[in-house]
Image (cartoon, rainbow, N blue to C red; front, top):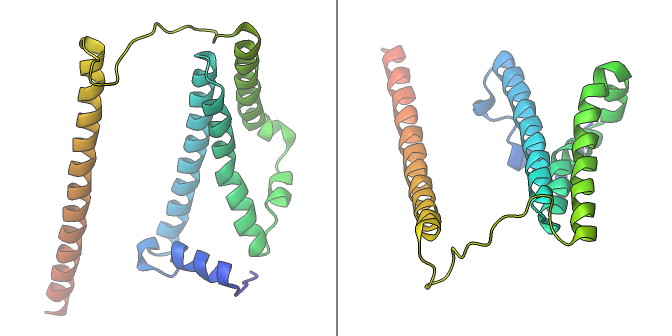
Length: 187
C-alpha cells in the first residue's frame, strides 16, 4: 500500500485516525468498513430520492445540489484510494456488467428522472405536482400549518439537544465502565 506524507495526507490521516482503538480488531474493522460503505450507499440513494421528489414539486436548485452531493462520497472514495495506490475503477471493472446493472440503472435512472422533472418545470413553469400555497413563516402566519411548522422546528431543536446530551453522557458512561472493567481485570 502506497503512503504519501504531504500536508493533505497528514490531515486526512488525523481526521480518519485509522490507528485509533475505535476500529477494534481486524474483524471489527472489516465490519465497520462494510457498515460505513452501506451507510454511504444509503446516503447516496436518499439524496437521489429527495432530489427526485424536489424536482417533481418544481424545485430547480435543490435537486442539482443533491445530485452533486450524492456524487461526493464516491469521488472522495476514489481520490482517497488513488492517493494510496488503489485504482477503484480497476476494482469495479472486475465485476461483470450484469452485476453492476442494478446500481447503474438506479443511479442514472434516478438522475435522468430528476432531470426530466426539472425540464418539465422549466418548460411548463411549474412542477409536475403543484402544492397549495401556505403561509407558515413570519410573525403574521397563523393557523394549523404555521403551528405545526413552528412545533416541528422547536421539537427538532429540542430533540437535537437531548441527543447531544445523551451521546455525551453515554460516551462518558461507557468510558467509565471500560475503566472499571480494566481495574477489575487487574485484581
